[in-house]
Image (cartoon, rainbow, N blue to C red; front, side, top):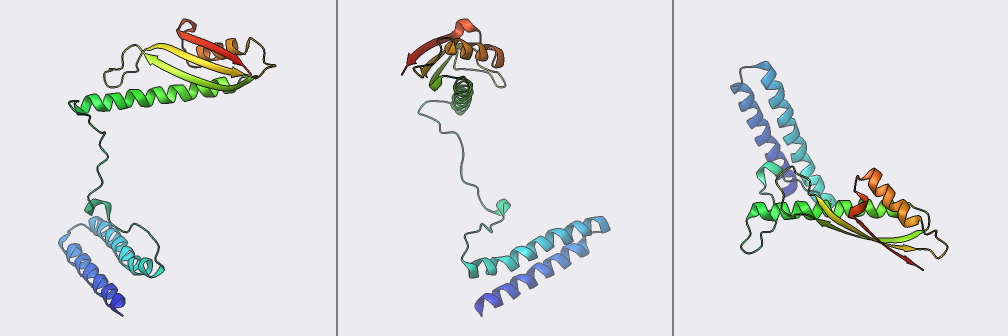
Length: 176
């Protein structure tokens, strides 16, 4: 019974607020927007007790009114926030590039597994700048019957698709 009283009280407050705001606005076009927003509040007010009754973990808080959790990049001791963010960007780019190279390598016949290590010329970069690649170490585990040219095929794919010069690719092949 208390839940029904709360629902009715919330609906009355929302409707009174909507009527008051609507009377303050001179433009009919603005009144349409106010009706839309207040309609959304009414829907949220009606769904809240239904949600509580069903015991479902839905987030009914309005994001503008709730303080969001901090998602800042962790700043290590003595490091400026900008440097920490740049380091995170470089590591993320390294991860993406390593995964792309690994995917290219695993697409070649005879390659069982691939381990990739990417080194950049400088881990510090300016915003909107792509770091220069110093070297890519690619360790391929090949099937016993794999051709010796499998590694060269991977190097060629890296050169063509990712535009990595062959002289920057260190290729290590192991057969099982």
